[in-house]
Image (cartoon, rainbow, N blue to C red; front, side, top):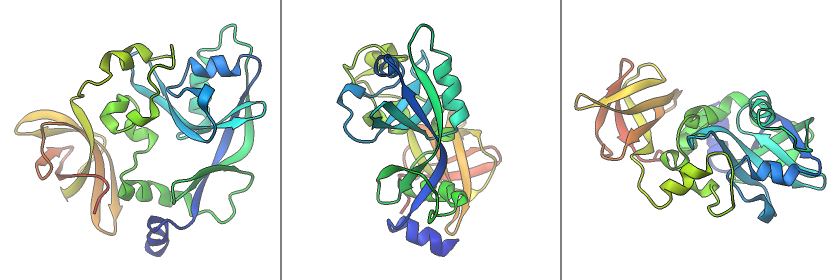
Length: 247
């Protein structure tokens, strides 16, 4: 696995994840516009999008692809989770959600595509370790957080109009947020998720820990005032704060 990991980190190959959702119908554009953080009127290529709750916190995320019948959504989490989120908001909208037996292809050079087969993909179990070393969060790492707190403000198109969570995004536009996504180098590995303490005060949460060829590493969301190089504790572990991506 270390040889495969080295190739993936060098930008070779791709990962494949099953399950793609086609959103179609007369109201497909207006419905999705009211759900996600991206302005789909300007969508000309695949783009990541967040689906927030009314508090501006991340619930789901997907890569959106333009399609002749509407839009394809390749979930960052599960297809079931994304479907549940979207169905909750369909009232009188003339929109259909169709599950397709396709794959989200995530290339390690940064591209994404839709494919019919997963042949040639890196093992799916390698993906969490790959994303950790690249400093890329999984949906499970960012769910419940504000986009600004986990470095995903680039996925929010301000001025696109009303969508779920837009009011909070508008209020916080241009303002500093108290938290940031950081790397954790374990001096003593504990449990995750768990609260993190610094100088006796709660300063964040460890989101994920992985055993890596470089020792136990993790991702956390920690208050801005805690400097890199500080040691935080929580869940039975002790961690050195590091910038992302890991060196």
